Every structure is written in structure tokens, then in C-alpha cells.
Length: 69
Image 1 (cartoon, rainbow, N blue to C red):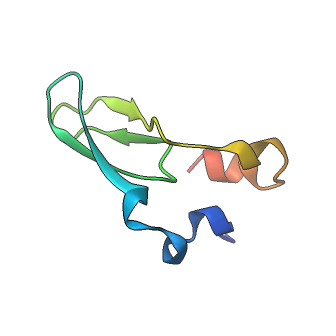
Image 2 (tube, rainbow, N blue to C red):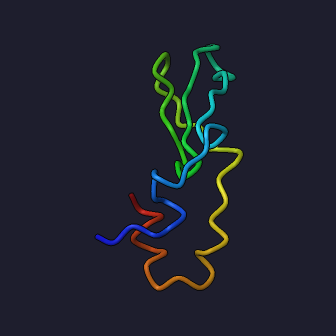
Image 3 (cartoon, rainbow, N blue to C red):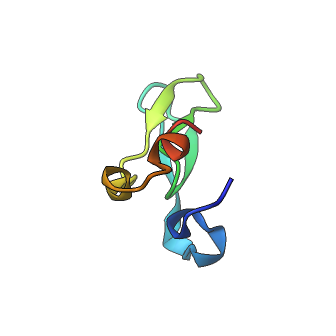
């Protein structure tokens, strides 16, 4: 599968990887900017990425494939 420029890790900056605390158990959950959701390693809760921006999904012909990964 082709990777879009927004998902090319070679273009990521340090601030594109960040940690948040799980509201359920307090464990650290690492997010990359292209993660739409991550599972908490402590309790398994599925957490949405508050910085995820899928603006390209409105026009990209591969959007359905990207969002289902």
C-alpha cells in the first residue's frame, strides 16, 4: 500500500510523537500523529488521538484504506 506524505515517518518532527495519560487508569499512552486511536497498555481502553487530523479524508481516494488500519 502506498503511504501518503502525511503518514511518512521520515517527515515527522519530535512533537509529532507524544504521550497522554489514560483517564481510566493513569498509564502513559504513546501517540504518533497519524494514530487515530491507541489502546492503553494498562487497562486496554481504546483512546482517541486528540491531535489526529484526517482532513485529507474528505478528498483522498485512499482515505477508507487509511482510516481502517
